[in-house]
Length: 305
Image 1 (cartoon, rainbow, N blue to C red):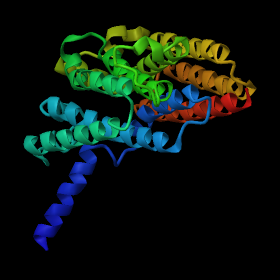
Image 2 (image 1 turned 45 degrees about the vertical axis):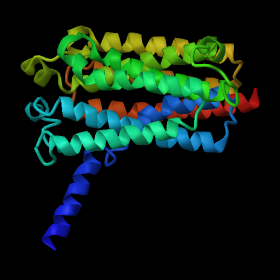
Image 3 (image 1 turned 180 degrees about the horizontal axis):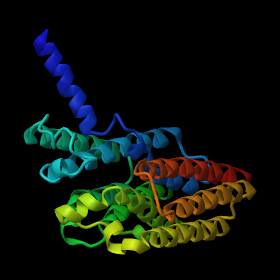
């Protein structure tokens, strides 16, 4: 009975290590991938491909979380928000963490094999970025930018899964699969990620300053709300250009207005002199909702155009 209880506790800790008990962070990676596949397919991608992208985004983001916790296992105990993570609390060993990370990457690679050569090539390119991101906070003043590049790969992988589908395209023929629309979506995704992850980093400013690691929230200092506003303004502009470029119907523009209002409301709250610490996490979750609202607009806007 005791051994069974210990096994259950270990599996529960592994689920927490993968962050599958907190799906918000997994969904927020899935969103750009779905933006890419639905826009590239004009609202009607193959269902098996959508399924692969959904599962792949869950597995890939989980792998990234494990890698992050492996690098930060000695830093996380010093941060209030992260001190109870399984590797930080020594609930799981480093060896278990490495095995889980390898298993997650192998699963992601297996799913990527169902894509074409260009998409698989991009998937492989994303792995070093995912691995390096946790280290960036030690030497790079805006580590959130590295995360944004990783998020941008989700767009390019899913986009090329459609535009290079059933072709013999070589990985070196990348330009034949990615046009202006894809790069606009990539830019919107990078700026959006910079915005919401800078908000998320604001919750850890004091701990990060004390430990001596970098974040965009520390880099921009008192101007962090304005930096977030610039990122979200750039996101909205890129989406507007994308809507015009792809001639999306009016339903997309309705969701675009909702998103812009949501980002403006977030900026207004960030400007308040007193902010509850829980508000940063709340705004992070709000961006998941805004992302899905935009996805609905892209799908309907493509089908009605």
